[in-house]
Length: 282
Image (cartoon, one colour):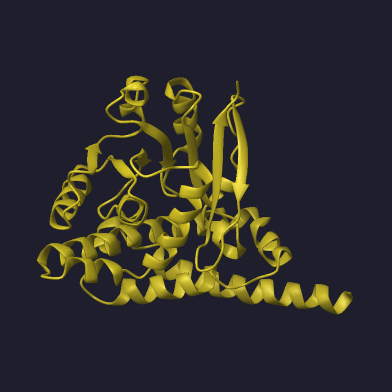
């Protein structure tokens, strides 16, 4: 027992050293450098971070690090870097799709494409959707993979909501290039763009609303949705709970508004997201 505890402590200290080294490398990077730097430095840092946070760890090791309050700035910088680099990656692939004669081949080469296949299947089954239904996705980004997979594999239509105007415009061009514009639309806005009429309009037939893992602040988003979403429409959001992934995304600690009931579905490889399904209490 003692040796197991010592082993966990040694592993925690070893990981802590790696995290602090990575933190020193990324803390001075501006948003613009992460998004647009032409050198391969940011890619190497992203690969290093991704390999670190996806280690298969015992929960006590992650908890030991999580309980170190002095590490909060480290986690904040790592989360910022990972989110921005993910946007960069999606933007680069979106532009490659637009320039390609084989856009679907480019799309399926996206590094996390297989993850999306599994994640969307979880949400499709968890929501009990059928072909012809429509879903909203809050935080759809420059490459709306979730909505694309929903349509391609399950014939579920979608509306993406993206608050960054340039990313919204780019995603619209990508959908047009893939021939999906008739069934997937993108709106430039945020959660406050949604109101009750969006869910009762018979032309949309909206059955579900999904919130991206990076969409924040989740408490504010859910408070608003509680007011506008009808009982028959379900909500989901994505969080990270496995290993060190949860150190970069504190959504698993979220206190839900009292008007919701919750159900969680744990991830299956290669997916890292836990999906949290919500229903308004009757």
